[in-house]
Length: 135
Image (cartoon, rainbow, N blue to C red; front, top):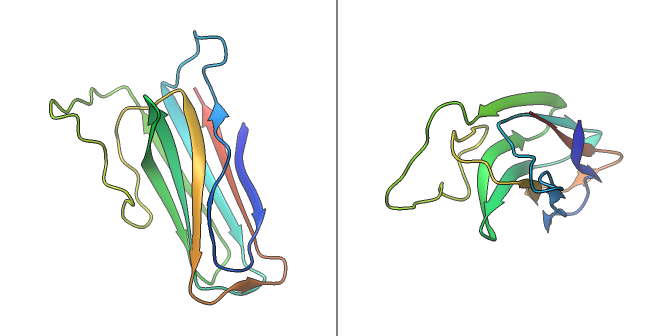
């Protein structure tokens, strides 16, 4: 289990969290990933989007979006490369992707979270955590 993001929510902001490199020795690759997003709302809040991204060739693109508002929630996605994905035009998924969706696409060798909060600021001890279980 890898922790991709663990933050206390406050003022509105956009944060690109440090990437977590999966392919440490050059032999590991991501065949599938289960993503878990946990938002605990203490008070306040507008919208919080945790875009899980992967990169290929230095270009980051969205593979999932956990969209939270003013309620505590836990959400899951399971992505796999078992189904062939090809796009002769080389088009990456649109960014940002739609709220609470995931894209079955290629998976690079690292993951990160791009966090965007907007609307009323979260207060108190509101937190967001995103985990990945890579296979």
